[in-house]
Image (cartoon, rainbow, N blue to C red):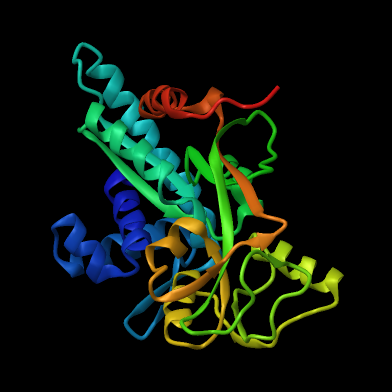
Length: 294
């Protein structure tokens, strides 16, 4: 196995296809295709299912992602050791964040880190299942994971970054009561939800179930980022982070919930396995992290 093959494999994963990978790498598409096929022959497994012009990771390919990222981190570590006399830090920093937490504090952390270490490349991936935050780190897919608490994992350090308040948003001109709306007694307005499992929206549905009042379902969307556009289009209401709601407050109806729907979020990492870039990122985290209560 060649390092170049590993880099090409991850480029295809990150750019969702050979074309995007070739553009990102600055090489021809056949070069990427040939490297992938050679890697598959050497490993004796199929890493991607080729569907038309698309590329979908196979089970073996998904298993390969974590170790492949670890290989590149190990190479970066060796490079850093050989260049230890230089003041500038190089390499890659990899973190994942759930959609609701990948803004605000996380962006500020990355901006501060990049200002200090401009030669380190940062990859911010999406954590769709918050229950797998610890597993994602343990599998080698990333060094840092950002998610709502709790984040449970052996040997992981968890640093609270802040909290997110979630509010109800409805299409413009929707007639809903003034003031906070009880979670167990939502108005009879169609709602846009994401599928159950792995999101704070599950707690909203549980509160509705306990209250015995469930508004009609308008759309069940796996694309969380499309909820606000659907609200603005008049399809129905939904629950989103307050900062997102306030950004479009002039085009939607915003209501707090009763009780307030506030959830802390944190960043987790394994201090025993951090790269030099990861160690430097921890220093930035500690400078910006909110103090936790005793």
